[in-house]
Each structure stands twice: as structure tokens, then as C-alpha cells.
Amino acid sequence: MIVQFEKRCPKCGHDRPVTDFPKNAGSPDGRGFYCRAHHNEANAASKARKKAEYEAAVAELSDSDRARLGR
Ligand SMILES: [Zn+2]
Image 1 (cartoon, rainbow, N blue to C red):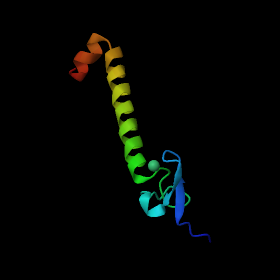
Image 2 (image 1 turned 45 degrees about the vertical axis):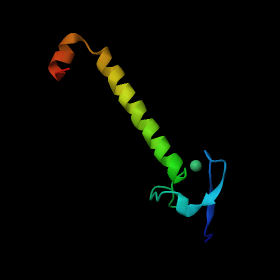
Image 3 (image 1 turned 120 degrees about the vertical axis):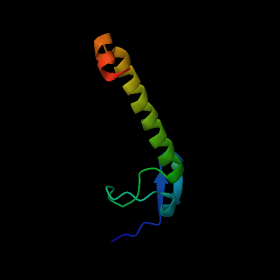
């Protein structure tokens, strides 16, 4: 088994110690794809995107749907 001490964050573009990567049980090496800083950034971006999608979906609703949802 190869123990990895460094891995590359695609956003940083250079190798960082694996301890800079958040733990991720779903990943083959047990660490996240991005370093901590960029992991948080990616999370915030996907959260913002989901919120925007939700707002857009609400905006598409008919008046009766909106009334039903209390919007
Ligand atoms: Zn990074």
C-alpha cells in the first residue's frame, strides 16, 4: 500500500500535504478532491447554485402554486 503524503489540489495547482485535505470516506484515498480552502469554496459555490436554482423554480411557479406554498 502506498501511503500518500502529498496530493495535488486542482485549484491550487500544486502539491499540498494530505492533512490540508478534508477527510472524505467516499474517496479512494480517504481525502477530499480539493484542499480545505477550495473544498469550502466549492461547497459555498454549490450551495449558492442550489439556492439560485430553488429561487428560479419558485419564480416559475404559477400564482396558485405560490399561494399553496405561502410564497
Ligand atoms: Zn486548493
